[in-house]
Image (cartoon, rainbow, N blue to C red; front, side, top):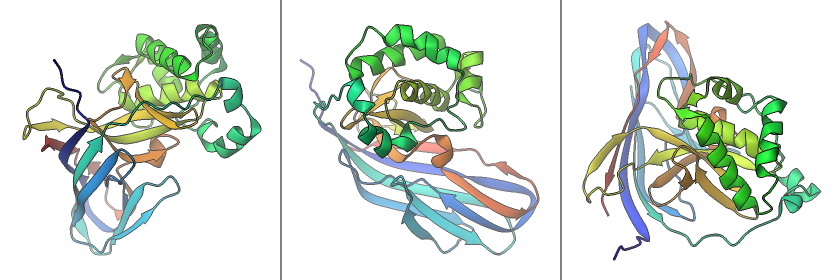
Length: 286
């Protein structure tokens, strides 16, 4: 008989940064790499280190994401950011919130969640796509069923292909080439849900990808993206994997689209830069 787990505990190490073709004389940076404590996840320890060393300041942005800011005023050839955290995730009973689609289209809901209903630069799509979708979801009354139908529809039409898109690719770009990664599948899904009047937001974080791993086993991965939609409560779905988010999803940041949640961004004065790439190591410890 299988055992349904109610919690899981992970240590996470996320390393990223830039190197310069010469030097950067100065830079100002924002890192969104620290998981917050939420209703379904408890962060018992978190740290962020920068090389070269710098004074760090922290605040919560409009969407509730933990942002660490720092500036470097001395010339540097390389910038490296190392974020580490210990996070316990918890399962939650399925939400019984189930506003009707007509209720979601009420003035109060539309006004309260306007930012999660309006198109953004990366979630713009042509009206023809929405018209095609309408026939698919018309037979559903339940919002959860509508969302599930949208997720299936997207996964049947967009293949997961690494390297097929750029970080700047829009939902329309992805739809036309029918390929993308988790960021792209999330943007397309968000666009379609918003077109139906369902508030939807972008979530970035980590996914422990080996469900059968032993405690103590390390998984090398990368940042992951998924979606939350509002139906009285916020409910998480993972368009890439075709299901609801669970114990193995660790939330870091939320926003309207990727542009609100990049792990590291900044401005600098100096020679051209290239990314150091990203290394994410997740170890299950409980």
